Image 1 (cartoon, one colour):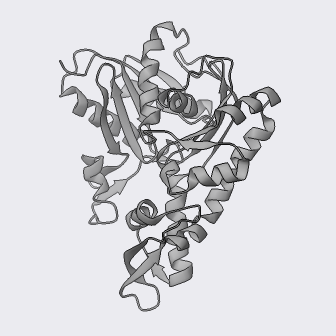
Image 2: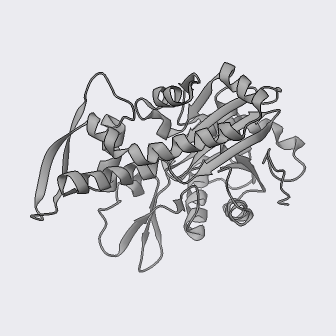
Image 3: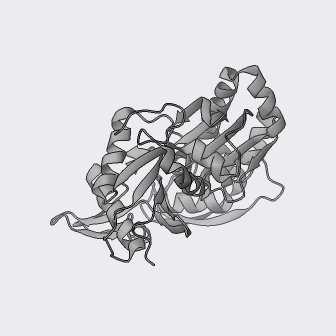
Length: 343
């Protein structure tokens, strides 16, 4: 049986799109990248195929990321990308339009919410619902959010970091900052330019982050061979970079995330802070996988911190589990902290 017609959950992220189909689990995990022909406007590739083209395209082809800092920056491309992903999981069958639930950052504006809903409808949904990322992350991490018990979730994605305190199915306090995985990559590029006079591309910076990136001193100093362009000679240059250098490179974005966590804790009612102290902090999202992040948060807050078991697909899993609640949603959203009218 094809997936089309079943309810679908989408984690529409700045770095990647994950699609959850009811009864099947996560069926698609692709980068949020599209490649188009500038002359004709034709969509050439989406996802992993388009990502391979980043920084390598000829003049008439452009590979772009239609989402920036957690929100839609190119509406038309986002809609076309969603259509293509939905076509991929449906096997090209469009007989039954599904209901779709899409994740959004907790700091999203009403205009941005409307853009997400419209993109989902244009991509072929019968009805679009929204859920806030930290709520979905908490559900995906196995937290029972219906209890009168405070839990803190720190979701570090590609474009935004969402920090929220959740109790009784609602967000009590939250912060959404535009500092996450993308800014870590930018920090690496700036560091390489400043310290080594070498220009590296975005994909190289991301590989450095994944393979040797750390935000807390590590026992073993890992290293990686990096190729870039020397800014002095203009010629290719190869050098070895150590994980200890990443500590310095990541200092600024990491501090901003820690400040946001501290700020949310300061605004949280004392009873819930007591709960969080007992329950600990749960980290989700690809950014939380940078080595030592949980250790650093625990050292700075004094609260036991863990990274969720399946941090990258946590939000998608939570979105998928929320599909069971769609029949009880009257207002067209699952925006648990605000209940905005979107119908």
